[in-house]
Each structure stands twice: as C-alpha cells, then as structure tokens.
Length: 221
Image 1 (tube, rainbow, N blue to C red):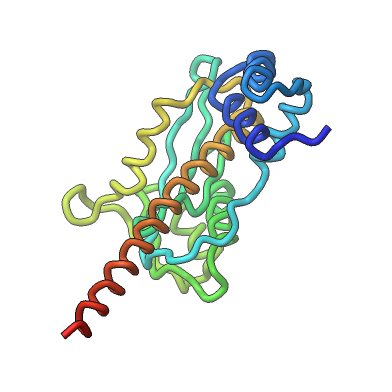
Image 2 (cartoon, rainbow, N blue to C red):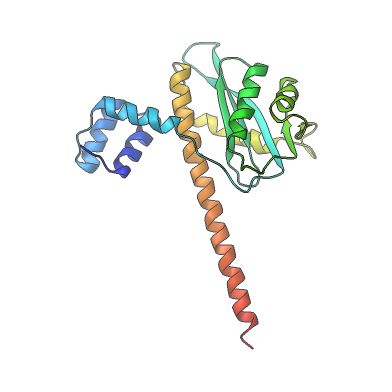
C-alpha cells in the first residue's frame, strides 16, 4: 500500500519528537485511517534522516562554527554536536555528531559543510572558538583560501550566532546511542533549515512586491 506524503512526514515528525513507534502507529491510524507497521515507520525515519538538504544559496562571507555537548542516558557520557551556521540565511550549513572532540571530527564537519556550498562559493572566513583543531581542519579542507577567524571577545568579535543556536538543545531528549542521536539531529536540522529558508523566501517575495509597487508609483504621474 502506498501512503501519502503528508502521512509519512507526520509519522516521521512524531517519532523524532519522542513518541514510541507504537504510539506513532496509533496516531497515524487516528489521523489518516491507515494501518502502518512499526517497521515501516522506523524505515521512514531512517531514510528521512539520511537525506541531504542540498546546496544552500546566498551564504554569507563569514560562517560561524562551534560544538556543544548532548546528554545521554549514561552518566558522564556525552556526544559532541558540531555545527556550522550562516548568519545571513540562518541555516545550518553543515553538522557532525561524534563521541570525541578530535581533529578528524573537525575535518568531517567542514567536508559536510562544503558539500552544501554552491560551486563558485567559498567563505572568506570561518569563526570558531579557541580549539586549535579548527585551524588545522580549515586549512586542510579549504587549503588557505578560507581564513580562520578565532573568537576573541563577546563585544566585537563574538560567536553568538552559533552559540545562540545551541540553546535549542534544551529541547532535545537524552540519547541511548549515537545512531539514534544522528537520526534525531538529522531530522531536526532538516526541519530547522526548511523553516529558515521558508521565512527567507517569504521575505524576498515581499521585498520584490514592494520594489515593484514603488516602480509603478514612480510612473503614475
């Protein structure tokens, strides 16, 4: 049986918001009248999380990068959530999840981000905290075409763009393993970017309408 796109989207969204597979199955039946197996819901969630968001256009010359800790069910065990954010589009250009904070993980983060760059785009600089691995990773992934802009102060050289983004982790659940964490973060980032790009698109449309209206008014008299 083929299920509607809306049915799949809602099932995946409910599962990644913390509902069990059994409760998601029940919710889908109550909303759409479809009987979906728990295995199908799990496969949809896995497939959705693995999809890439594609190239992001209109990126700023300066990107912001940082990492934060995510809680797990085990005491004193955390996952590192790495992210690169664009202040212009307000999208997460690239992200990475790891169990350790290493140079290899920093490189993987920037390769993931570069995969979403337009063909002719490279940022002038990437701002990070004081972790030395970032500098080596930036030079390794982008050669010396991209500068490393190291965080200096909260007033004139802050990294608040990405640090404010990490406040969303308060809503995240505790994770049992890194695989489930990656699926959750993948889906969450996808929804986050979709919302930001939609707002940006609406703003551009509104701006175009205002410009067209001014042009018409100019030729009235």
